[in-house]
Image (cartoon, rainbow, N blue to C red; front, side, top):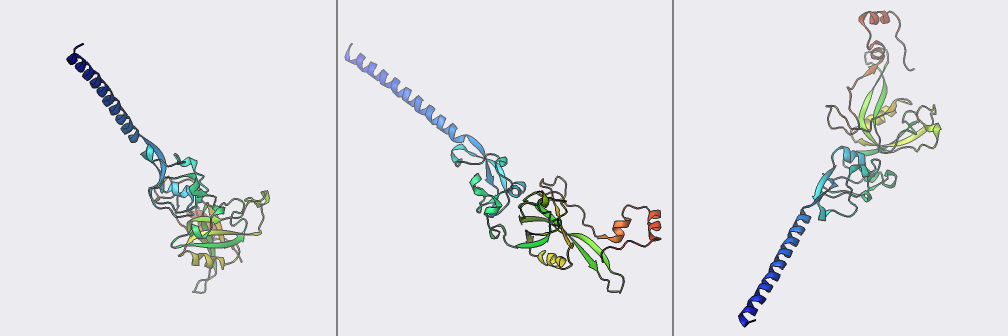
Length: 276
């Protein structure tokens, strides 16, 4: 083999090796680029969420949502589906917009302070009523209730006193409720011993509740709301829909749904007396 032929052969071999290395490098770069573009779905915070927020409320209101992130940006133990979160738990610390969610960010409500679960104009109020009035044994922390008040009206014109009842406030969160120890504390058990409940109320409603409680025993009752979101056109509600607010009186209870002849007939006999 002549000198020139040998040099040409060496050059061809080196060129082939260089071409192979270039192809291998290019393929590796493409593979890494493709890998970096792969995405996964994770649960993220759509907005800031204060500590003590109920998980089901955060999910139902859209504060927690499923979003896509680049696979290499996924944090360890990230939650991939909202069903992985226990809806009865609350946020153990503030969660900030854009954060990926892990189950460690939530804790049972019994392990968080009442103070951490109220913000701004929220107020925590403890109310003691008989077991039936507060659904003792049925009510749980994180439930939402409507508060129904009853009052005796004393007309200023000297007319006879009469009783009325209405929903005072809707969609109130229960922060703390009595634990059900046995069947004797279940709804409808007939027990009337007192129990305490802690509610999260707007500050504007607190005086109404205190005023209602002054009316005496039986003046305030809880009505449990659904856990599912409202499917109607009554606004963004995470715990059922709101119906029409009505004022119940003796006449409205007796006459509601009756025909005119039936009402005339009813007026010929004394109306039933309610209360003392």
